[in-house]
Length: 289
Image (cartoon, rainbow, N blue to C red; front, side):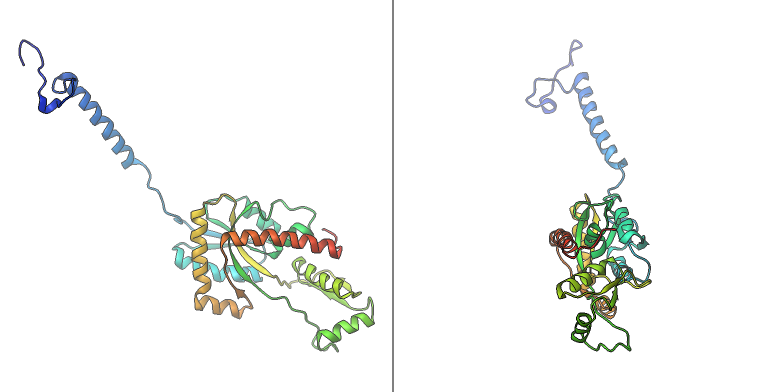
């Protein structure tokens, strides 16, 4: 410092031409330090990013408690609660061939906290058997994994004279219009109607057996737009749950044959099922409700 002038010192300034040791240089350094501190403070004060899931999940079941879909959902919820570390609530939303619950799931936030335990009824039958449904079974959902199926069975009364399928078919052909049959839900209407049509039988249909329900396949869906990372986490966790011997034993005892799939495979399967049901409804001449 001499005669009121500021002299740069090379250790401070280095090769730059701007003086960094004088008042202007110190001000610039202070501004840089302030900006750096501001960024650090913003990082420290920012809310932490939470890993999914950090709150309870919900399974929407489109049928009443005690049905096949509900039983499956409850066993699966217990298994996934342990692996995901969050409780899973079962939300039963029956009605309109399952379309009420499926629509609610389709319209839920795509954040991985609301899932649909769907079935052949909600994801394939409803679109063909009802005049309209408020959701698209393929486009409005992010497929997670298939879950399995329950076989459909043909039964007669214990005191029926028909002891096997051949005898029953022979009787139906010998007595056109005299035999009746029923099904537990619209999900069973198409298989039975297709059987009657292709065997060339003439039998009357009893619309519904109250309180009885028998479905075919089951699968897990998330709302469309759910992040792929969450879908993949759910897929892996569900695969592990279905492979667990304790879980498998419970579901087999209920009549389920369990298996999983990739999300892509479930998406292709759903699209094919919608097309198949549409074709068979046209073949059998079933009127939409």
